[in-house]
Every structure is written in C-alpha cells, then in structure tokens.
Length: 303
Length: 153
Image (cartoon, rainbow over all chains, first blue to last red; front, side):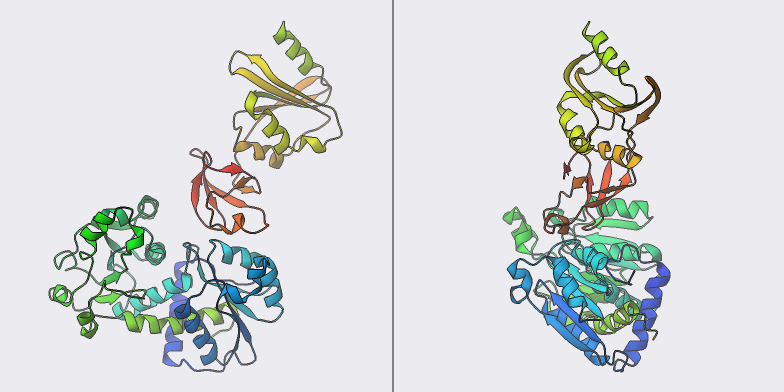
C-alpha cells in the first residue's frame, strides 16, 4: 500500500497537526533540494490553472521535475483510454501522481490501482483535500490555534465543496460554526446531520450584517453563483445580500481574518483588500507550503 | 391440494437449499444474483405459486448446493426477507436469514452519474452505514444513498 492523499474524511487530528507543522517548516524555508532526482506527474483531466500552478511550484521549489497535462483534451483519455490505463502508464515514469478529475471518486480508484502515491487535487464535487489543508493552515497560522474558534461560512453552502470539507476537518477542534446563506443555498441536511453526529455546534442565519459577524474569528466567504438558482427572482433578491463590505468590519474582532478559496467575483468588495483582516491572497500562498508538506508526506520524506 | 404439492416438492430434496417466501416478481432476480445458471445440479424454480402470506410467491430449490454467507448477502438489497432452508438427508437442518453485510462489492450501482464507478469498467463498492435504514455510502464518490434508490449492477 502506497501512501496516498485522497480525502480529509479519514485524517486524524494528529495527522492534520503534523502536516500543518511540516507546512510551517516549509514556510520558513520553501526552497530545498528535497525532491532532487524525483519526477512528479500532474494529471489534470479537468483544467484548474490555480491548483496546478500551486502544485507545480511546490515541486519546482523542492528541486523535483514535473511531467503531465493540463487538460484532458490533450491526453489519451480523449481517445477513450480508461483512467486505470492512464494511471498505470504514468506510474511507470513518475514517483507520485497529482491528479484532478471531473468524476467523483476518481482519485480513490486511482489510489487503489496505482503503484505510486496519488494526491487528489479535486475529484468533481467530492473532495479537494489540499484546499482544506491550506484553509486549516491559514486558520491555524492567523489564530495560533484551531481549537474553540467561531467560524462563519458565508454564501453558497449547498454546493460549496470547500466549506463541506472544512466542516468535516474541523470536527476535531470544537468549533462554533455559523452558516450564513440564502435559503436556496443553505447547508444541506446531510452536513447538519454530520454536525450533530460529531457534536459540532452550529447556528444558521439568512441575514449577513455587521451584527451577525461581530463574534467571528474566521469569516469564510464563497461565491453565490447565478447558475445555482432555479428561481432567478430569488437570485436577484439575494445577490447583493452576501457581499462583504469594508464598513461591515468596523465592529468585528481584531483577530478576525477573512478567507476565500478564490476566484472571487464580487462577494468581497475591493475596498476590503486594504483591511489587515483580509487574508485571502496569503491564504492562496499558504497552499504552496501545504502542498510541499503533502508531497513529502506521501513520498515518506521526513522534513 | 396445491399446498400439499409444494410441500411435497420441498420434502423431495435430499440435500441442498430451498429458498422460500420469495415475492414472485423477484424470483428471476434472485436466480441471477445467486448465479444459478452456472450450476450443474438440478434446480427447480416455482413461480406464481399460491401463498397465504404473500398472495403469490416463488420458491427455488437447488440440489446439492449450500450458499456461502457472501453469496446470501447479495440478496440483502432486493430480498431481505427470504429464508434459506438448508436441507440435509431430507430434513431442514437450518433456516438461514439474509443479513445485510458491512460491505457490498459489485452488487449495486451507484446512483451518482458523476461517480467514477459509472464511467470506468470497475466493480462498485459500498459501505453499509446504517443497516436498519438501509443507508449505503459509495466507497468512491462518498455519496450516501438508500438501498431503495439504488439499482442492481
């Protein structure tokens, strides 16, 4: 069994903490020769420039080499090759495979057939665990702890894969969640059930005001997309409600930090960027250190 | 008279398995789940027989064959209430009920069209997370679904 990284669902608290500590060591010294002589494949069956660049930068800064493709149209899967065959072929060349796929469960399956470790860089609507790890790292770094925090999730909580994974990963740390979303995009029942089963406290809101977020340690913004609405009248009604404006930050706590998985459209006003509480660009940068840590962990390299 | 005949047929099996109380519409599904077409021994399939409990029922008699727990567990999704009578030397020596297993391999299809199992030649795999309610979780796409919603492979 090789050591793949497929889902955050089965990561223990100890494992999460040890990965975050390793990411911290990479932040202190991001350029190393750790992967000297190693080849890492980045197989992006579905394009994702942001995630691919982050992984490829991580490999490059550790002195490794990258092979792969950035779009399924340029790979043999467009000729009808099965995922298994592609994985078997690439594993002849690479020491580790980073893959993104539009089908859910693709990374889990790849990890079962592959002789080399697999890192899941997103499988459809299912998991994007390296994003979750960089979210956790960002929270840990800005708050000094993951324990007992007030975390506010705002926007599209129905389809937002990142918020679902964050919710599951935080189960070890006694959080108080607040779900702020329009009715149509409210947190699905299965995740509220998950909260109850794991003793995670949560409150639901439909209004998003200065008062609602006064106690927040973390404000996790997501995009409310027009195409998610069946009722466009409803969209018109709520589209400007879930926008974070600088004026709303006046009464908030000093330690509040604003996160966003990016890309942002208009859900965070540009004047918020100047606030010291805006953290979304550093958050993306943290992805580099976290991915350096994940790659080394999967290859069994101590850092 | 009809009932007598049914009992006679059951009693006539020297060694093997009698699957009784099958809702009629499931008879051929069960035959295929147990891969009876691959057997060499004699198989009797009763269909649309009169039953006080079920109205119409089916019965399957398989000579010289005892099914493993794994084989029996395949029935748990479609026919959880059937009973398997284990016959040795003309006597029913054991009645086996169908028990839903912890894992289902290659039995049902995932209901999520975007699941890798519906797009790649590979067996499905489910974890049974709640046996009473019949909640299954796809090992691959991690979607939870009820056994009443899923289709057989």
